[in-house]
Length: 432
Image 1: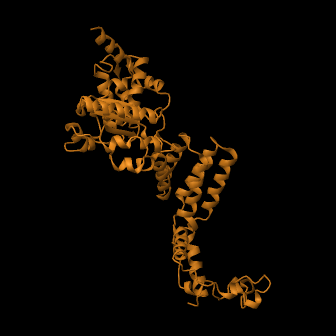
Image 2: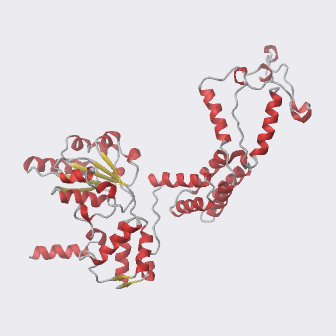
């Protein structure tokens, strides 16, 4: 009786997110693509066979919950190791204990490694024997792309399951259950509909965050309003890992929004990176690259603006530098687009890599050093400035490449004018 009462008291001290952790698969909200009949996760729960899994997804999507449910539903011993604090010694000790339990009692162990991407190669190598010999049901949780952060031998021996951010309806269901459930607030707190909407918005698809904000709000008042929620959640944390997959996803969306000429979307991703503490010099470098790669000669001033913004960021830093970045982003997003420059240098580089280099025409060769003229270098070269319009018909490319075309201007923006001029010049030089 005393033990039961003590256990109940301890449970009451646990965070709301821990108390509301599902105990069975049917209690899990969201991740329907992983929980349906016949899915690998269902088969793992319904069978006794050990299996190794990687659960990859943003924070608060249920990675720890699913590992716990697998253990609870299969009556397997649950051992959690945090890659933040554990080393090879702790991993090997957990595996050895699992081997002893399996040999002596036949009971299997779920070895759950949270933040597994933080393990170095030696620590991940220590997991391999247990995974290969199926001494444990290994479940690794990661917020980073495992193809970048997990060693290939471990990843190839495991099933990779991708978790998605919870939708607004899922977050709402999580909150409503926590308000009513005896393990949660047990109906002691009333949450206004607009306050519930605000909690859903602040959660950003993170169930754990939504429950943390709800718990904080419930400590402030029995009648939770929008004002109470705002006081409890002073500022929504930006979900963005500068070293992880979010880094690549956000910068990709940023570039693609500028390429698609959506200035509003591009500014959103810019703000998301700045607020998350991304290095502004990294952002500036990407804008400078974009100015030539995606705008190019359609608006040659774009590169000037981008370089100026990069220099301004170096000069004044943040927070004021975000204004310069925003100006460059708007300019790039609204500029006419052309990828003719990047295609031109790409095509030229491809030819060079294939060995199409050719012999430099003799009249273009350097004739300044002693003996060069005896070799015929520079002989017959015609100086363009001596001719009308600064143009003279002579061969410039190696003979093998005279018919190759690299720069193919678009008709977008200023490039239309450059395209017309280039067409006339090319026709003149080639005698067309």
